[in-house]
Image 1 (cartoon, rainbow, N blue to C red):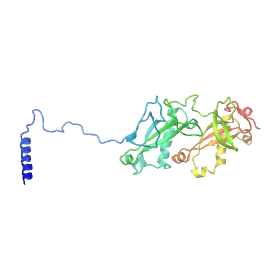
Image 2: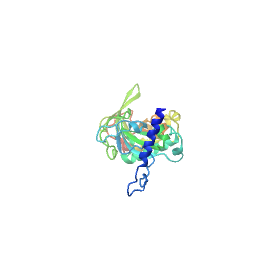
Image 3: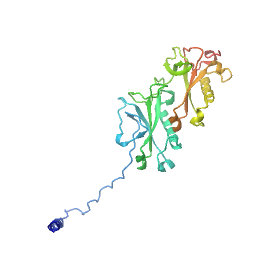
Image 4: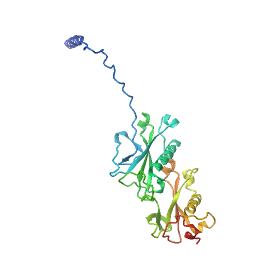
Length: 296
């Protein structure tokens, strides 16, 4: 009973104290009047034009980190876009292989080309699409990020540390661009492509990229003859020789497709190379013509 009486007495004291409060002169008594309303919380959106210490396909706000591009880094965020329309209204984040993610990659490809000054597939570069976490998507995040990294070689897409921004990296004669190679074979099969100067003896040269629009990944795996034919057209255009029955006696082709994950995300760019099986070349075959690339 004492405990109840003590609480009651304290309450009475508080009432007395509060009842003794006097409104200061010049105030209206409204403690919130004139204060701006707090804005609703906004979902985290990563920045573009910044460099990154790591590569990830899912970005968490709690571990988000950027570095100065003049310091060592693994990738650079060259564009941040937004999912729109039906995709933005969807309950779940787009999955790899979905039309929405392919659309995002197409936009990334366009934006990245503009920033680099050329096709990233023509160089030792890779493109990764990063998206929010599932919890961030549920909270309203609808962004995607286009990250580009320098890679070790045409055979090894492992990102390497670099210093400096990639902005304008493919304008003019770039050390990142694919050029001439001396392929190394084991038992007649391509082992790896060793990059060399075009003035050094070599058997292969990068000629361009074509887009394979219609095939599934499984169909592409069975379409070597069709891919070879498309690459040979690029070879002929690069070397300025006619596309006719003599073409296969002048040169061959090597091609590098995207990985299955990249294919399912929408990257259908096939890298094509001129291949000289019967002789070593000591100059670029660009514009060489029938005399520079004769029938043998």
